[in-house]
Amino acid sequence: MTDLGLQGKRVIVTGAAGGLGRAFATSFGSAGATVLAADIDDAGLVETARLVETAGGKAVSSVVDVTSAASCRALADRAQTQMGGADVLVNNAAIYGGLERRPFQDIEEDVWDKVMAVNAKGVWQMTRAIAPLMRGSGGAIINIASATVFSGSPEWMHYVASKGAVIAMSRVMAKELGGDQIRVNVIAPGFTLTDASLGLMDDAKNYGANRAALKRNAEAEDICGAALYLASPLSGFVTGQTLVVDGGKQFI
Image 1 (cartoon, rainbow, N blue to C red):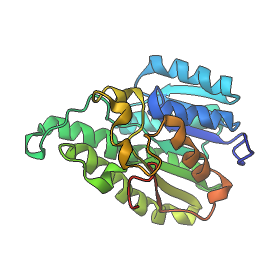
Image 2 (cartoon, rainbow, N blue to C red; image 1 turned 60 degrees about the vertical axis):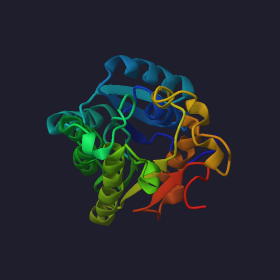
Image 3 (spheres, rainbow, N blue to C red; image 1 turned 45 degrees about the horizontal axis):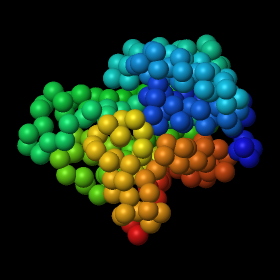
Image 4 (cartoon, helix red, strand yellow; image 1 turned 180 degrees about the horizontal axis):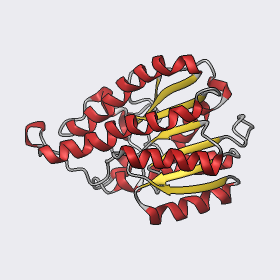
């Protein structure tokens, strides 16, 4: 891989036990980073750590509940102890797979609250726990939203609203953390062929592919280049931005 200036960088990826989070973790490993893979799923983290090290990186793993302030602080402590701090945080943890589509008026309150707690509150909790580790040396925070924020996918309001909140929060974070040279950006992937996505519907591989300029849906690896760019010195003057990675479904 081309040298992106990420060799030896200390990277935290949440939701790293599978899917897009595992792909992010592995791609940072291939760039020579030390990756702290975090998730509520301890078993999945074992495989992610193996893949990171196979790719050429160093791996640390830790169970975290992003809805818990105490759990996020414990993860920050582990990052400090095991890696000496953090240079990059990828807030990827989210409720997505298995989420039932319903008209907005029929979404159950407890489901709405759970989605918001993980997808939106979790980004806030993790960022406020990890950002202090970056103060004084700068860093990059990459929050994962979704291109569905821009299309307004029907019967998906809880998910769409939570990811819209991620974009809004990221703009505030970028301004509040910019004085510490901490950059905050968003990746908004289109429909991506992870196990979670494939389980949402029949023929998921072709879902909406005809609307994309590239006439296919993304594989997880298609999203990773954006994360590597936003973490690297190549994007050193980029903050507060949302990068849509969807093969050309939105805006064209």
